[in-house]
Length: 277
Ligand code: URA
Image (cartoon, rainbow, N blue to C red; front, side):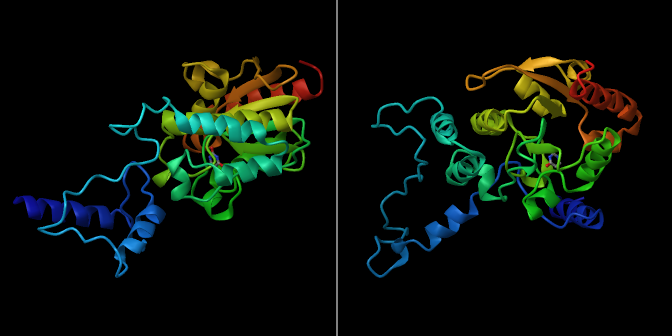
């Protein structure tokens, strides 16, 4: 087959398989792109447009990229400002506002902020991975299919959204629901840590590998991390928080055989809440 024919064949195959969107692995900042198009450089007083006689075009620089002449920028400026923004938040509303101002996570250019749901005074705080399509639409965590399963798991131990508080390690949906990158997770981490400090739960439940690894500071997989109590500590917390990891409900939907282990984890949470563990 000719290359064009092969490409067309592959495209047709993808369309028939249900693909209705093309996306890249990295989010594109389309707001910035359209702002650039609409910028005053297109006005009658603008600098000459690129053309055969135009001066050589220099690549636009992000504020955080080191320039040839400027002194080297700090290694992770976004994280630095994330820390100061997050630490300055005195309550959950201020933390939410700080996230709206935060420019260090490009995901926010392609998705809506999904901050939290449930009762901020709850004893139990659950932290998942990242919002999906339905969460992005509604601006609330765990409202799609995995959220429905999570609600059933909570109900099985006598809890619901009035008695727990729910958030994620990422506050914006990664394009196409891909796995969050380490850079995205560390950009959001200061906010997640502050979130936990402000909620000050009695028990923390981490759903899935990314949340467990990030907040337990471990490299092991979820199979190894789940079902064991661990103490979460951070600079701003007066005491360590008993923490347990379990399987992510989305994984349980794909691998129902693991529901038995997740059930044991949730029973451990119930026993801890009742003071029997
Ligand atoms: N999966 C998550 O980890 N979080 C959500 O909010 C939804 C799905």
